[in-house]
Amino acid sequence: MSILERNRLMMLVVLIQLPFLILADLTSLSSSVSQTILVSLIIAVVTVLFYNYKKSSQQYSYYIAVMLVTLSALMIQVRMGQIEMHFHIFVSMAFLTIYRNWKVIMLFTITIASHHLAMFCLYVEHSLNLRDPSSIMLEISDETARFQHPHLSI
Image (cartoon, rainbow, N blue to C red; front, top):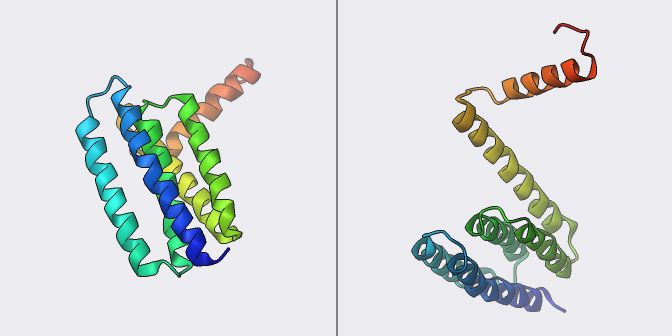
């Protein structure tokens, strides 16, 4: 299978998921259906345009990796963090093996890790009014030390 065929197949994989993203939002209790439809249209247009310009390029596989992470994040978001939606990440990673390129999988993984780190920093700052996310880790480790060693005064 050539890179052109792989890119075409993965473009279809991305496009096929968009109606399911909208359907997932319709079945949730949120009122963000219009936003989901708009984001889905933008993803579809960018995916097809980028495919038309880079269909024979390895660069398109990197775009697909980031787009699959984005779709996973959106799917999790519209279903309000439902655990079952997290399996979308693993299925997406399995689809990426069609490229037989470890760099595509690594980009996928790094994108997920950076998303989690960014959301952690935003969450800590927003919910606890902290400017330094590392301070929460110090508080957690202090509580853990007190729990494990109740006679220590830290």
